[in-house]
Image 1: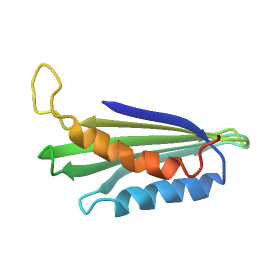
Image 2: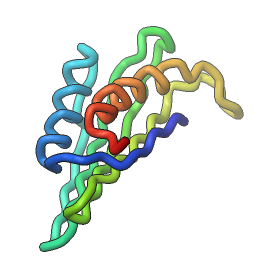
Image 3: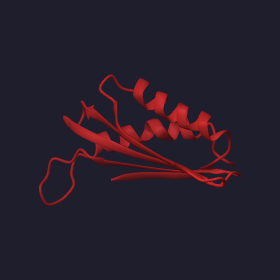
Length: 113
């Protein structure tokens, strides 16, 4: 499992759109499997689950992306999983890290320095 988290600055909808389009354009086999949105007057939360085929790992990997905003900043958590071919321990996690690297590239444009 690979994880990336960070505090971002910018418009919530713009960041969400950049994440969705960036992930889907980043791989011919990438798909948005499911999403969930929640909001109140003060907070917003969006969860997206993506999946793609990893050519290097010869398996499928998933990427869960959560955006949470309190109106001032946007917190992003991205966790890649799957891809291992072993039964009792994890080997061959190249696909997870490669999938996660896509979100890192997108998030760094909005990251608070």
